Amino acid sequence: MASSNPRTRKNPDSKIQFKSTVNNYIFYSEVTEIYFRVGADLNLSKGKYYIDWSITEVGHGTNNTSDTHYHQPAKTLVEVVAAVTGKYSFTVEGFTGGNTYKGTNSPDIAISTTNAPFSDVTVNLALLGGTNENVVFEPASLSFGSDNTTKYF
Amino acid sequence: MDKLGVTEDWNTDESCTASYNHIMLDAVAYTSEATDKFTWEISGVGNPEHALTRTAMSFWDWDASDSSLFTLHGAWTEKFALFTYDLSAKTYTARSYGNLNAAYVGFDYMYDQINVNSGNRVTVWAGSYTTDIAITVSTSSMAS
Image (cartoon, rainbow over all chains, first blue to last red; front, side, top):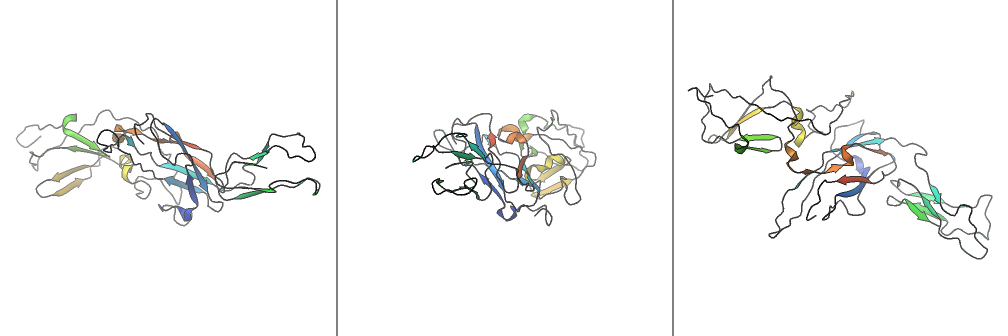
């Protein structure tokens, strides 16, 4: 997009996605802060993009008429940076040096990352030094989707 | 001032309405005359809270004339323009005045502004999502 027609107002092949998982972009009563995330496809070329915002206010009061109290956000500049190998990493949380006794399972061990991937990333679990039929990982692989920053095995 | 030397003054808040980037002076009873002169004074012009740095590239500029990037509220980066509307003929007349200045008038701040990421740009690496970005208001509403 950025090279051929940098001024288009179209989302380039839906390669930029938005998620507001908790409240779905809605300010409920007595809320002053909500959150969203921006995701960029791995193949999206670097460039600067704008988010156009619009708002809808739900009416209140005795006659339930809608009224304007807020102005929509100004356009948000999104700077897409080309993919970098190893930009984010996965971290194993807890259980470092912990013991798992024969015939039992370990507690759930977390693998986490700060930023969710745009499309699924699979983490495969294997025993260092080769497989051993007496040591089993459940599940044997963890798939991180766009809503996942922590998974357990 | 009209041709009879009488000053007709609408220069008060009561007779002006502002919406988007327009100020309207209601002058229904006024008949425009060819020799009339308009004196236009705007006070209390402030600085915008946020702005874009203009780093022009060969393929991309952020000029105010770029109507695909700057649409409804982009007009403040341009110079003031005077429009008259003839109620009986239902025609607009506009003229560019080279000596009019550009300024940010901030009319849209009559409502509570919703801020995204404190007005800063969002940086996202291709292939990933950002962490949570805050959308904030300074006052909470009674309804959603």
